[in-house]
Length: 101
Image 1 (spheres, one colour):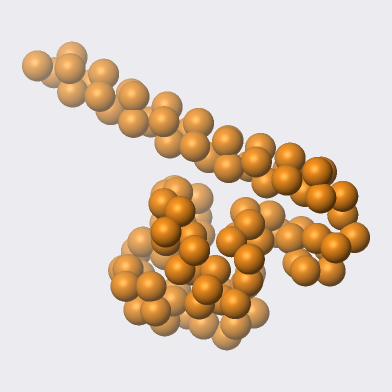
Image 2 (cartoon, rainbow, N blue to C red):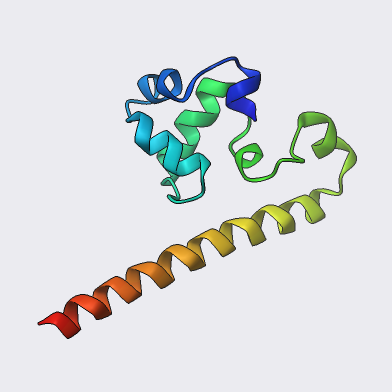
């Protein structure tokens, strides 16, 4: 949403943060969770706060009118859900590799 609002393609954003088009596509499809430094770079290029990348309701106007604690809780939950899924997949891959040995 923020990338499109900035009238940027995935390829343009990828160039700005020194990543590939596929990387940006994976992040936007929630197939990949970027590390904090990449989140910061994306936010800087899009001229938004990093936390806005995790909540479609995180426009500046909504952040001001929403309880700060409620917003932090919602964003934390979304980040936790994505990290949990990533960790679950990583653990499954390690177990599969161990079984193959």
